Length: 415
Ligand SMILES: Cc1cc2nc3c(=O)[nH]c(=O)nc-3n(C[C@H](O)[C@H](O)[C@H](O)COP(=O)(O)OP(=O)(O)OC[C@H]3O[C@@H](n4cnc5c(N)ncnc54)[C@H](O)[C@@H]3O)c2cc1C
Image (cartoon, rainbow, N blue to C red; front, side, top):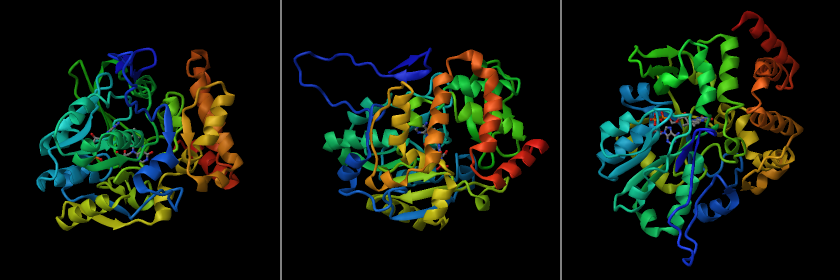
């Protein structure tokens, strides 16, 4: 993998291919995401619930250890489960992210509770996550693998081709994912608070009380700086945040993605963005889905051992907690058609059958807006228009007069 400074992403290049040899296995969910095919291979059927995917348990939860719960991205369920598997002697290694440096982020093979805890948090910029795969695949370690939905799908394909790797895999823990953003976009937001993004060498996007603030450490040795995300922020800064984190700088593949909630993981973990969990200063909650029997057993065992605490979360609450993005992501074929229309090259995609009839005209509008933003990013002269367009989107793309009036009030008050 090499870092393209122009595109700001890690791109693969193939070397060492021998012309006469049979083509090796190429696993790249960036190029192809066959939801129906992978579902068939993993679960031997298509899900009854095409929006949520397979689920044996849906719950809210958190790490029993308050220090993990506080320092983690959501409620620390991921770290608590990894820690628990270590304590039980069930894994030798946990594949996680050492991704807080925006330029040199990579994967880490964590071999102790301390190393697992150092990897906590959510890293929203591109990282070289395949960097430790050869070491993992060629070892004899029993492992748990943490990854974004696309990375979990890739691991499933690796495991289908390599039964020896499958036999050593104790758990695939998938993070819900709304997309990865180029760091220069994130940098635009950081600049508003007087920090030079080029000087940032460590960024914690989820510092402190859930859902957390951004903590920046810079190369000049200055004291770390805390800047707000959504909570405790002015309405105008929230619009700036959305421009930087949810639009123009998002990787195109992330915009055309049918899997937001890690359908092929044993256990999927996300943020339950619901008012009842979100009061400011909340100690942190995770949304948890056990998708396989193995995943359910691990969760039940962790609860019994008091490593993880669970609370009720209904299927509909889970869907609601992801806002409109889950429904939009599931319509990735529609996004793919709009992308082709706009002259972009979409990945090859199949979506679950049950979803074909759930398209609405709203989703075409969202797809156009989302993809046009990505397309115009390189036209720097358009940047002064980003804020007026974001205000327009904030007010009018809700398609509801009541929400429009409410939001006009919020803009006027700056809240
Ligand atoms: C790019 C991204 C987008 C996300 N989008 C959403 C969303 O739209 N909706 C939602 O509900 N939740 C989303 N999440 C998930 C959420 O932020 C938490 O990661 C999840 O709830 C797990 O929280 P936790 O407290 O259990 O994690 P922790 O206990 O803090 O552990 C997190 C684990 O994930 C690993 N990790 C962090 N970043 C990455 C990465 N980029 N790639 C691979 N591994 C990583 C860490 O090394 C660590 O092992 C996103 C996360 C990421 C990284």
